[in-house]
Image (tube, rainbow, N blue to C red; front, side, top):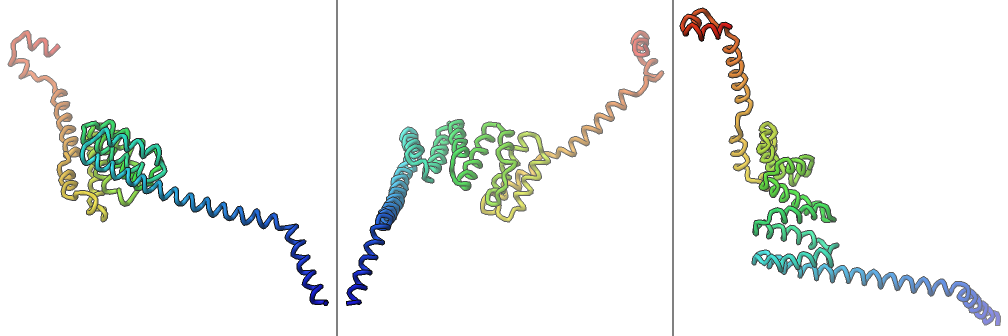
Length: 251
């Protein structure tokens, strides 16, 4: 009898507890289920977006290889709007910039790469875009813009590539000492072998003009000219000329 009462008491306690806290339990379970469903849906949608963007990017690369600019622009715009959060959107800008260069539309290529640098792309993709933009600016004879773009960059993987383009820009600006320093730094970079043509860089360094020697020669020539101009007119000069001309020189 006591055991029966004990069971009844336990049941009553359970009912009492459930009536007080059962609502919280139901809400907690429902919330957990919704969160789990939402997380799974989010992962599924992200995966689907990546797959769709990947397929679009593959079609873009085909258009780039075939030189179909209009089709490539349409796909690139779609990737940039619908799938802007994927890495394929940034990669599409690199691809379309290459096609613009193939079509001799260097300013359009520069604009696309500048957009990529201002966007949310990964650091690695931005370094690639920055290097390509620098080469386009150098092609456009905008050497100072190249210096402004690359001079403060510090990345070991891209240091040699940046250094070579910087050296080219310095040379175009007449900053020969800076160009020499940039080329030498590239040649001494242990990572440069896999990123730049060291023979070409060495040739560029050797081909730099001897600005220091030219400056010294010009200074010596100027001093000689100044000394010659300062020499007084001698009596021999006066006597050798005609009397009227001699009178003008002396005066």
